[in-house]
Image (tube, rainbow, N blue to C red):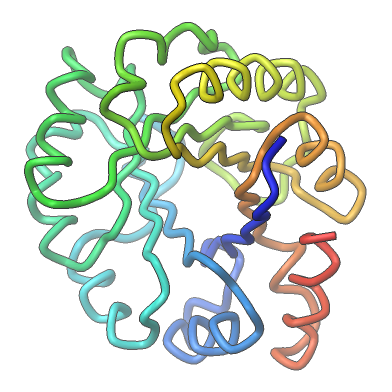
Length: 219
């Protein structure tokens, strides 16, 4: 079972009018990663931010920028997001014709590569790319919006992926995103997750509350 539980606050739930301050606040509150949700209004039904915004946010924290690309086609924009300051670039198998090639490109850019599985995407979608990835992201909601409820069937998928990752002998983050709260976080951790993405569960209350919120999720 994973030992080192990391918390990745999703800036999707932060105050967009004060994003630099919000990122500094969660950094100081004990965040391990800064999770950046990139949505294109096409692959998912929402629009968020692109490379220029990430480049502006990058100086506000030295923590890992964990950038989840919910865009298609994803390949033409990988270089731009890498140059903007992403440390991890996570893509979906459905976001291009050749996810193996996408992951190869991310690694060639000197970044960590992640693969994300939507609720209906089976765990075996990772089977032929585990040698390339540094992170597997289980979506426990349908991507596109914050504030959704955790889909319980994600727990079985997390367990399955934990076994697949452990069998490789490699260090691969097993991240879960969607509906993470004080109630669901322990369930995800027990199933094998070691990185928890949380939006509203972190960005609740003022900045003084963020450290308590993060500590509660970490367990």
